[in-house]
Amino acid sequence: MTSSLEHLTSPDSLMRKERSAVFRIETGVLKKIVDMLVGKDFYWFLPVILAKSTDPLWPDAGASLEKKIELEIYGQKVRTMQSMIIHKRVLVSLCHGKFFILSPNIRIETRDRSSTGKHLYEFTQLDLEVAHAKTEDIFKLFEEILAESISYIKEYFEEDLQILGRKIEIPKVPFEIYRRRDLEKEHGKDWERSISEKSGSPVWVTDIPREFYDLEDEASGEWRNYDLILPEGYGEVISGGEREYEHRKLLHKMERDGIRKEEYELLLELASQRRLKPSAGAGLGIERFIAYVCGAKHAAEAQPFPRIPGIVPEL
Ligand code: ASN
Image (cartoon, rainbow, N blue to C red):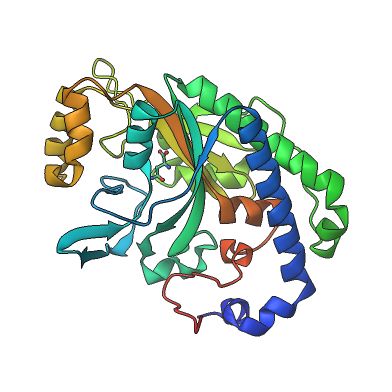
C-alpha cells in the first residue's frame, strides 16, 4: 500500500480541509443531478443490494473481479449487486419509463487495481434507464448532466475548488463520438488510456463487445452501447447502451457467453411474453466523476470510508 492510500484510509484524514471541500462539492453535484432528473419526470427508486439476479459483468474486457459474492438467505441463493441492470430492465418494462437509482455496487476488484485511482470494491453509480430511448437521447441527457453540474460547482463552490487547487472547464457539448474498432486500430487494446490522456474533453466511445443485455446489431455485428471517457487520465466514467429485448437473441447470447440462465428467469420469461420493452440507459460512477471535478488522485477521495481494492479498513 502506498503511503498516500494509507493516509486516505486513516479516520484522521476525515479532519483535513481538502476532504471537507470534496464532500461539499459532492453534495452539490448530487443535489444538482437529482434536481435535474426529478425535474424531467424521472422517478427516483431506492436500490436493491441482495438479489437472485445481478449483472454478470461478463464477458467484459475491462472487468477484473477477484471473486463474486453469493450467499444464502431463507434457503435461497442470492448475490450482492454488481449493477442493477436486470432490475432496470424489469422496472422500465413494467412500471415507469424513466427513472434513476443511486445504486451501491459491490465489485471485488483484484488488488493490483488499488493504485489505478479509479477502482473501488464498493462504489455508487447513478444508474438510469429510459423506455424506447436511443443512444443519442442518453448522450444528450448525460451531456447536460455533466455540463450543468460542473457549471453549478464553478458558480457556487469556487472556494472549495480553490482549496483543492482545481481549475476545471465546463465541457462543450455535444461530445465527440468515436468507434471502439477505429480506436483499437489506432491505439491498440489500451485505447481507453490513450484517448483519456490525449483528449482535452470527455468523449463517447461506441461499439464495445460485452454483456448479453446490450443490443448487438445482427447484420453488422456492431454493439449499440457506449462508454464516456473523461480527459486527464480519469478514464471511463459512464457505461451504458441500448438493450436487447427479444427472447431469441437474449437466449442465444446467454448460451454463447456461458451465462447461467437460471439466474435470469424473470427477464427471460418477460421477453418470451414480449413484455420486455426496448430501452436505453447508462450508469455514471459517482466517485470517479467527483474525483474528476475535484482533481483528486483517487476516486476513494469521494468516499468518507474508502473502499480501495486490497485494503479493508477498520470501519
Ligand atoms: N449501469 C450500466 C448500464 O446501464 C451497467 C454496468 O454498470 N455494468 O449499462
